[in-house]
Image (cartoon, rainbow, N blue to C red):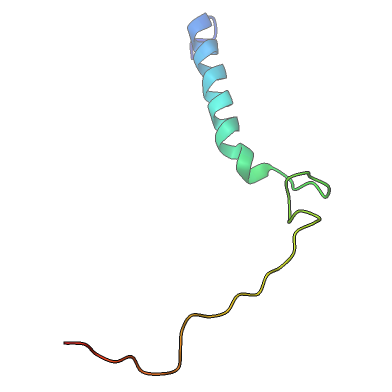
Length: 61
C-alpha cells in the first residue's frame, strides 16, 4: 500500500464518498414528520364512474 502517496489518499476519499452516496438511500431512516410525505391535508378522495359497460358492443364491418 502506498501510505505516503497523496494521490492514494485522494482516490480513497473519492471512493468512500461514492460508496456513501450509493448506500445513502438504503440506510436512510424515515422521519415521522417530513413535509413531503403523504397526501396534502386538504386532499379529498374522488370517486369516478367506470367507463366499462356490461352490454356487448356491436361489430361494424
